[in-house]
Each structure stands twice: as structure tokens, then as C-alpha cells.
Image (tube, rainbow, N blue to C red):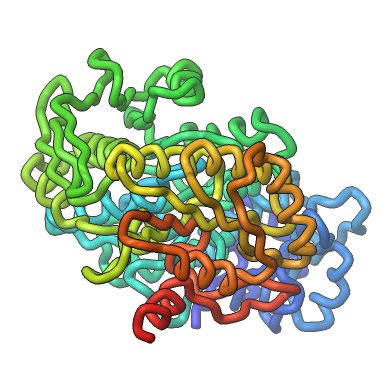
Length: 483
């Protein structure tokens, strides 16, 4: 158990009061249900719950003090006012765990799509160079820490700094973080000054939270101000958003598939069903790309990971070996077919742009296949993208199966009706049960077809009415072909 004097925990956060001087802090939380004796409780006004309502509960459970930014909360010797409670929580967590971000090299990747793939490729590159690497993101913590798990792309500050503390104790060289727009909006990584940061892309997503694409983009951009002085953000610059970042942050370096004047660009490109090859050029070096990953968007992920690696001083031979070592990414454009099955690909994609990137790549690689797509929209999330998902599928697919994908607390029929608005052709079937839809797709699948299954990847659950119910697309497929 960590025990640290409160003066050290409050450093750079708030002034110490006589009532709490020399107190020993045993924990920090923004969840009043987790408060124990010796804890600091940070009262945060969230989207649906205001932590300030639970200040008395926190004291009843033994909280040493409460941190708040509410103008309506009475300020006392043990209730301390700060300008931003979320920023305070991040700094408190960093202080409590000994500022671990200062004792490990950190890389942050943001963007709508491609964060997980880019971080996995970079992890393999760094490990090929002999580095010990921890990855924090959508897939959880890699390598896994049994006592820690979370469901957010970027965990809450207390969990994040606990992981970084563990990484420092275990002598990891690098921590690679997927940094979500929510995390940037909520100041979860504000105490980290990254050694390198990268940007993949920005497309329609999360407008239920950010309300507009401009807000979403502005939150993403916060990452590029959290880099060590003298270091350069690496930006996939072929999109308008990438160009805008390079304009707003002149220290950025451009990474491009199209522009030979970029700081890092690719030539001699070949993309087939067997993989990707090409050469990444920069002013000082050339890196041979030889990968079994498929799709143009994976080439972008490889370029971004490789350019980051060069910027932080990884040798060329390690980059080339690391690219080869990353021979597949779980649940990302993963062909799970056995030799006797038709082609079946699973992918985690859940945005219209990710659909287009994936489906256009598959069409390029399998031009003679009849393309069938199984997909669905999440409940209690950005509704504006639902019809756009259907438009993206219709653009490439011959047949579509519309199924549930984490409906959460929302009625599946309402979700499906929102999606259907995007279809202008009668080329889809609708199901209110994902397994039933998947079985229907499999029964109608033959060797001339290819089935792309979006949304779950390797996830093994469905979120329905507040419960995480066990569910696996992969296991259903395996059982179908075993019978």
C-alpha cells in the first residue's frame, strides 16, 4: 500500500491548510463509493452525476479532504477550492504515484481511427530494438497487469498513473498511450509531457459528447501541446485535419502517402492480399516496409509508427524488423477463415470513415468477391453517424446484415431505424439479435463471397440494459463450421 504525506500530494494543486497538515494519504478517487479512511475525494461535476452531491458521504467514510471547483460548495479547512477539479485529479494522481511519467519515456497517439494499430506496430518496433514496452489503450494493458483492468481507451487519471507507477517499478523503457478525445477534454493526461505524439485522422464520431466536429477536433489538438520542448509531433498530413494541425503547430512533421515533399513519405507501394511493401523516405534515411498487414490504411499506420520510431532514435534495422514482427493485429482486419471456409474478416471499426477505408481496401484486394457486410450502431452514442454508416456500407457491399452492436440502454429497433435511413437500395436484412443475424449471414455464405464483420473485433460481450453479456462472433463462427 502506498502512503504519502499530504503536502507532497497537494503539490502544484492547492494550498495546504492547518487542519490536514502532516496527514498520510492512502488513496485518491473521484468516485465517492470508493472513498476509504485516509483518501482524498475529488468532487467532479460529470455529464450525468455531480460529485459535489456526495461530499458529506465522502467525509462520513473517512476522507481527509475534498477537492472541488464548484462555486456552490462551502469552502472549509478540509474542503479545498481549485479552478479545475479534473486537472487537479490528474496532478494529484501523478503526485500520489511519485510522478511516474517523469521516469519513463512516453508516446501518445490520437485520432478517430488507427490508434490501436499504430500503437501495436510501434510496440513491436521498439521491442525489436530491445526496449521493454507497456501499451495502454482500447485493448487494455499489454502486457496485462492482473490487478488492473479498465474499459476506457484512456483510463481515468488514478488508474493511468497507477499503471505508469507499475511500469516504472518494473523498469519498462516506454509507455505507449492511445489518447482519446474524452481523455484530452477531461484533462486526464495533462501532467504528462510526452516524448513523442502522433495523429492518425479525424472523422465523424463522439458527437454525442463533443456536440460538434470543431469541438472534437479542438480537444484532439490539445495533445500536440503536451510534447517535450524541442520534439516534434508526427502528423498524417494527407487530410484537411492533418494539414490544419501542421498549420496550428508549426513544429509538426508531416507524414504522407501522397506528398513527396513531406518529412516522411512512401514510394514503390504494393498492396495485395498477402501484405504491404514499400519504402519510407525521409531526409536522412530510408526504411524498407515488408508487412503481412493488408490495406492502404494499415500502410498509413505503419508510416506513422515508423516515423515516430525514427524521431525517438530507433535504428532503421529495428524498425524494419518490428514491421515484419507485427504480422497481425487481433480483431483488426483479421481474416479468421480456416482453409475450408469462405473468407471471413472481423474488424473493430465503428465509424463511417473506418468502414470506407476497410471496404475500399478489401475491394482492391478481392475485386471478384461478392462483398457481404454485417454491422450495427452502438446505443446511447453519437446518433449522427448511424445513417452515414449505412451509406458507407452500401457504397461497397452487395449485401448487408444490420444487427445489434452494444445497444446499451437504447431500444434496438430505434437504433436500426436510424441506420436504415442511410440505405437507398434494398440490399439489407435487419435483425434485433446479433447472433441470429450472424448465423443468417453464414448460412448464405459461399466460396465466391467475402463476409466482413464490423464492430466487435475480438470483444467478448454485448452491452444490453446495463449488463455486459458474454458474446463472441468468433466462437459462433467456429461452432457453425464445426457442425
